[in-house]
Image (cartoon, rainbow, N blue to C red; front, side, top):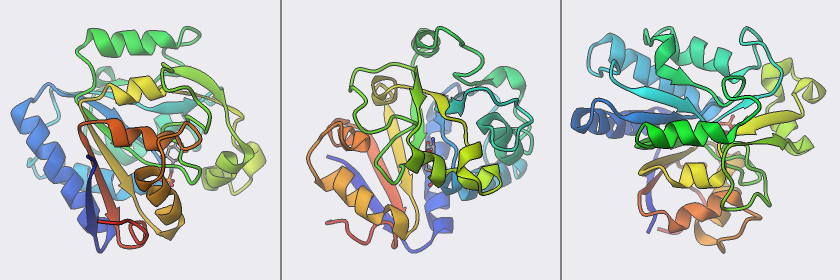
Length: 242
Ligand code: GLP
């Protein structure tokens, strides 16, 4: 049974995410964290950085595994997720380079090795997750098999449009290929925190959580995971039944 918590504003959602992360780190300082990118995550990383700087959160022992990355972008490219993470989190939170892993280019061309490294180091304890407007998680587009491991994907034009802002507003500049953790990779995480903000996510969030479990809506698989907490604002949660 998925737990759902709805808050009035993004800031409150971010504070709740940090409460949950704080408890995780307190119990297990050497946690392996699965991390996500996207606009939804910006207030969360802001709060994380604030707490690290105020010494309310110590991330020295963690390792982080990002969900996905575009293929072919230099890490200095403003659209790359390595750059996003460096700017919003790693540098301001003073994380060392050795603590953080990305599926591309680190594991190219044998992307399933990303799963092997995650598993060999004990698995992901705490996975932060957003949701795409078509129900994708990571970059697993509708139709991705449930047993998929980390793999290369071709992005739909709709997903490229949804991500165009980081590419000067031109969706054709968004790379066509990306590498993402698979659905099985994500599902193996012990705890999954799914965050959704804004009205543009309300319909897909309700479909994912209350509709049938179907690969047409990749996030719907989360209904079957024993450790999922959904955190959203009023706008994204407007169509949820509690
Ligand atoms: C991208 C990322 C996803 C993220 C989604 C939603 O497609 N690969 O991990 O969940 O965008 O992003 P946003 O938070 O900007 O709506």
